[in-house]
Image (tube, rainbow, N blue to C red):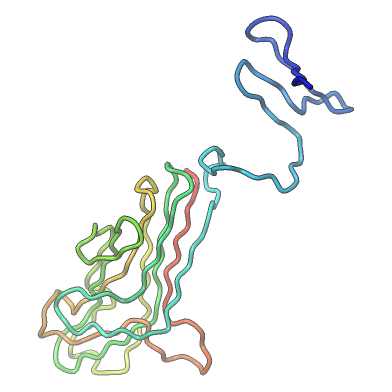
Length: 211
């Protein structure tokens, strides 16, 4: 049996329009392709999200990484926090919102102290300190040696945006001693100083948002 073909009569610009009982256009063809309107699609399969148009500000996806492992930064060189997350953007022109949040421990019995940290972006699923630095901060939660000697547990929060045009990438948070000086005190990330049974000490959240 041959194919049944229905199309608008005549040449270019003529359309095939299917209407509902109220006279509303449900499917309207064009010279190439068609528009579906006022229709409910039950469990549709979309081959690629790149073919979809999202309203600006729409959250396309969210990925989250938690850590319960305390890491102490005891060097003037950057070391990984172990907090890293890979994301594969679904839309090339979207925006990535990256957040890092966690408890820290700071004790400065001998010298000045502050959080020195950065976030890198590496292609694929790998993580490297030499990867592209997309965020960095210093002097965070800084205090002078005369003001605190111990038992200081400030929260560290990082918030920034990045473009989604790089394809699959992995973000990693790194830390080091204040100002990269080995003579400054250590500080720790993902410290545990909460109630018993607390599930998470630090996390990274990445959201892909439609532009």
